[in-house]
Length: 201
Image (cartoon, rainbow, N blue to C red; front, side, top):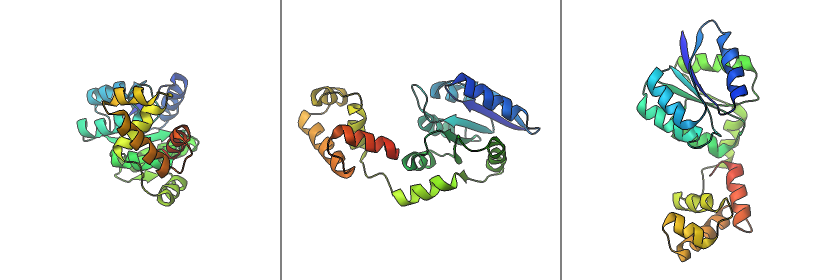
């Protein structure tokens, strides 16, 4: 029996996934979580074979939860299931130790088959996304540029961002200018949008 833990912040989606997987004779849903922090705690408690994580969750997202689970529960393989098929997300998920990356519009039978393949030691990646990730290349933004752009998401001023990140305003301007250049954007709002669309943030 393959023991699976589900982490998905939308209760209805989580319930539907649990019901679908419960119909499989060799898969058991051993735990459920509504956010990333809960996912890490549940995985540590129930020690599942597979942790199936959504990316977009409140608080700790699925990518951060993936990294924590692979560290804390070494026998557990992590599968990322997402609405957002962004090349940057795939790269980040693989770096965090994910064994699979699937988009939610895949047929349900493919999910059960992917769980079996991952349990057998295979890596499963949505083929269209894999091709897009290869053509997109690596994330051009440095860690600090990502921090500054992420802090600018809510429309914060240069001063606000500097305060949040304990940087000088001049340093924040330099990082923003560099990020705008690297994303080929006209301003920081567009840079944020482009970085998010690529999964670089």
